[in-house]
Image (cartoon, rainbow, N blue to C red; front, side, top):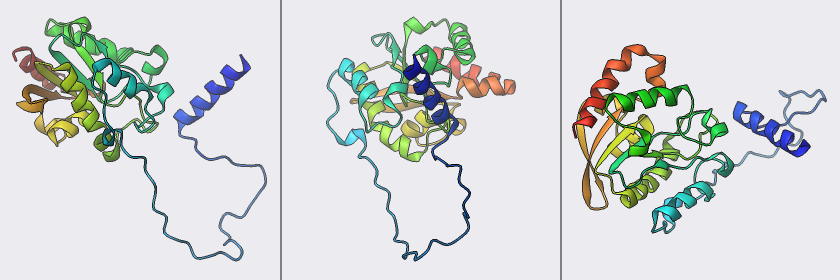
Length: 233
């Protein structure tokens, strides 16, 4: 029990962005260090992206890889798997898990998930009738994916989609839209696109993430128009 409490506390501090230890002794933070040597330029060393290695050949192996490989952004213990029917012909990609998804172990499990389910219901779909993919299996502490994340995750998403071979694709949020269409969702959301996946051109619709729609009700007509477009593909 004590170990579990300690791990939970450390996880909480990590989510809060604490990354530095401090002691109780006073010190002069502005004083120059004694006999300070010239500072050398530090070039950060980054792990090679997972896409640089040979990717798994089956969907089951790829899903296991995404949950465990150390080169993929995000801690392995906080990652969430894809879900739904991989043979449905319908793929939906969200940028990353929501903060509350970590406790449930399921994508879109809280209020944002309830909104997502209503959105699907409006176009006569349920989760069981599609395949839901997280672009990033883990949620970064900052709550957003940067350019390095997008670059590392793009080939993994393409392999994931290649193995699933959807007939149509819905992208929710800027990160997967940037990865596959090269622009923010707001600039490309009101049209159909073709994304080359495994030698086939998959008809794709990009739109605003439900979490933003929940924050700004005036965006609901926009996402509704996009969903109607997706329904008719």
